[in-house]
Length: 171
Image (spheres, rainbow, N blue to C red):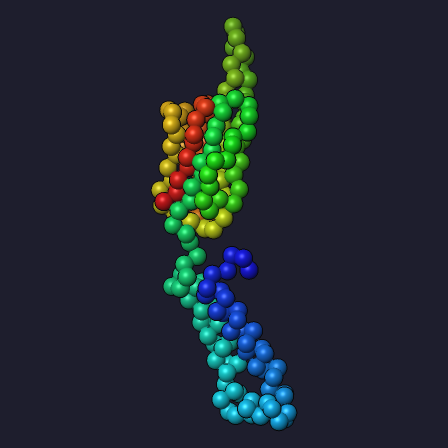
């Protein structure tokens, strides 16, 4: 209920009112409730159910109260070491996770650590798929958006992220 918009409230209140009027129809024999005996009140529950159904259908097709929001933003303070990034700002973000994978490769003269960093972002409300930008106040290692849809994004970085203020913006 906390994520309901105005159209959701109108729909569910209409259904509840229809149920109340139908339940109250049995009370029309009580002298103070004789107004329920008129033919008008016989059609009210059906009209409210039709209204709620129409709103649900229009909302499902996106013609009323769009299901999508226009943007999302995640801002992280990256430390450049093994510490977990600090969340500094977020907008329409349900959850995020940074995964670092380290592969040690032995060469004849030395051991090399190959680091791949993956940033997984889940959106609170679906976003309109548009442009996903990754910015920072320093040069970032090579990166690629591996998956991006209305519910989540996966961004892969080749190498360790440097100490920076990383911003992911969906517009």
